[in-house]
Length: 207
Image (cartoon, rainbow, N blue to C red; front, side):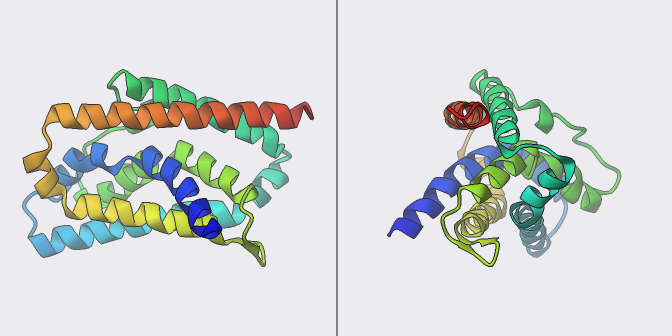
């Protein structure tokens, strides 16, 4: 039961940060003209890409920070500040700056990876959350953060489900509904960012 609670607690900010509903219009534009089977395979590919990027961040992110000489507390505080900034933008009904990358590409297949998978879905905010969750993961097995990887899998599955149902979402959730969801996700990110930031500051000054 405790493991399930840990996984859900870790999955909530990851799902809020990836926010695949906000990228439904882009995905529909990229798969326009394809068959349903091809669009379904594209959704699977994007979800697997998100899972791979965040999993690599969970397994090797801390070692990379150590190599650069960056304290985890400083990284956590910076990540919290980043989430607060992104969350405030989302509360205004805007997309975070990291999501405002070029939305067009001559090759739609490449665009499914860049910018859709990275950095729009698995962007800096999601990576920062992943590394912070890894350090606090109480279920480490041979340096593998079990709960964090399970949360990443749940977030990737959410990305897949949303993109696979993108046509249905387009037909039943209007632009106003998308804006409301974006603002709600922004509120969650601000709260999580504040908690991460204050925790990082307290750890850095050994409070």
